[in-house]
Structures are given as C-alpha cells and as structure tokens.
Length: 360
Image (cartoon, rainbow, N blue to C red):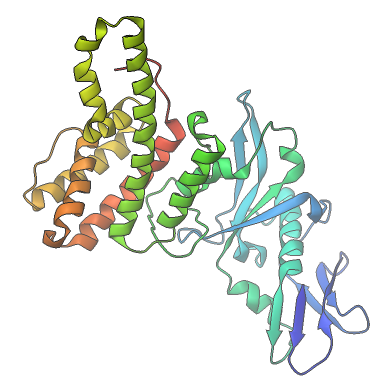
C-alpha cells in the first residue's frame, strides 16, 4: 500500500483497523493518519491472509449482486469457496446482505486486502480520497477462502474459469457482452472444465483463446476465436476416433476395405464438427436452437445453403466468413448476435466434452 501526495515527503504505508470506530486507519508509521470508514458494519473475525482476491467485470451487476460461490467436490458435495460482489457493495448498507454476518466478515477481508493493494499518488491528500477511488471502481471481487479449498484434491481456480464466464464475469472490461447469461440467485454454482480437457496443455490453450474472446470487441474476431476452440476440440475428436478405427484394422485386416468410408468421414472437417456438437458434448436445447436459428438466418440472408444440424450450420458460417466476408450485409449486428450464443455454447461444450470409446 502506498498513498502519497506529490508535495509531501511522507506516505501512508501502514494499515490497521479500529473496531470501536468501525474504520481503517492508514498511517505513515508515525504521527500522520488517514481514516477510512464505510456505512457497512465490518466483522474482523477472519484473517485477511487466509483469503485471495480475484477481480472481474460484469456489466449486468448492481450493488445488490452479491453471491456465495460454490463448487462440487469429486464426491458430489457442495463446497463454498468464497463470495463474489461488486466493490460498490462494500461502501453501502443499502443492499440485501448488509446485515448478513458472514458477508460482513468477507467485506472486512475484501476491504483490508483492497486497501493494502492501493497505490495512489495525488496532488493532495484529502479525507475522501480513498472513498472516491473505490466508488469509481466498477470491478467485481471474488474473495476465495484458501482454507476451504485446502482439502479439495488438485484444486486449481483456473479449472473453474469457464464457470465465471458462464455468469458473465470476465477479467477484461472490454469485449463480448451478453445480458442473457445465466443469472444466479443467492448462490453461484461454478462448473469446471470437462475431465477430458483438464490436462495442463489443453487447459492452457483453451484459456488463452478464451482470454482473447472475452477481451475482443470485433464481432468477426470473436467468431474466429470461438471457432479456434472448435478446431482444437475436433482434433481431439479425430485422435479419439482414429485410434478406434485403427484398432478395428488391427483386430482384423479384413475390416480394412469395409471401413474406408469411416476413414473418409474422419478426414472431413464438417463431419467432425457435427460429431463434436452431437456426440461429444451436451448443449442444452435452448442454446442449441437459438444458435442454430441465428446461423440459418445469416446464411439465408446471404443466399448461402443452410442445414438442419447446428454443427453443419456453424461450419457453413465459418466458410462464409472465410471465403465471402466482403459480401455479407449488416455483419456487425448479425454476427454479434451469433457470437453471444456461440460463446454460450462453447462454454457448455467445454463443461460436457467427453471422449467416446466407440466410433460412431
């Protein structure tokens, strides 16, 4: 922490909390002090060092958007790993959780850590400088309880990043936005990457692409980045089914002629996309139907053949963008709507992706 005026030699670098005043005291370690308080009552029971803060943006959140964050263990047991809320909710007692004793504990932890991270250099230091800095901060804080996750085998918060995306929480304040994402009530239940994608290399590749999607403001690039995840996954589809087909040949050379069509299908990208959507993942019907209709409309509007199958239409839109982007009318509006639904479906695919053991 460092709060300093350009015109004075000392800086506020020390932090403590006065329970009697319900206020934080920032000081230079000697006689200079700066008081910061909030309307919210704070409870100091929890040690701030036992928690870690992560920051997100979500344009659909208000001061009252305060949620407990849960995951499921391998034993299917619900475990609360923290709370998520806007910084603005720390400055007010006018929301639903203001009297919740557990929220008051997390609010203290959050403010303590936020103040410790402050770095302000100003022309002058005045009484409201901290309040003004926090009230203009539109970030959302996820306060993770490190003690609650210690007994979760191989826990990594990055495994659950798609869970935050599903509710519209992004690390960037720019890029794809959609008000139709799932809206939690009091609890936010995070799902993680499918076990088939949990290996370090797959997760690293997918997270890097997702970071591009959630920070990109170009409708065309968002679609391309989403399709990059499709490309990555259909390579896994290829590897899985190729192994199965080779085994058939290995079991009996006589099968070679019979399965040549299977090899041909396997080499066809469009058919692998279809398999990904239909056989290797489980997308809910609303998401599937919405995306399919939007793709059909774009293809029809541009006099391009459309299909009944979602995988076929996604592939057709990809081909249209690659080969005839120059001819598409109203690209920003039509593709923007597709991007929102496409990204939702991508998240569901990453949650449910499975490797089949039998070739279909």
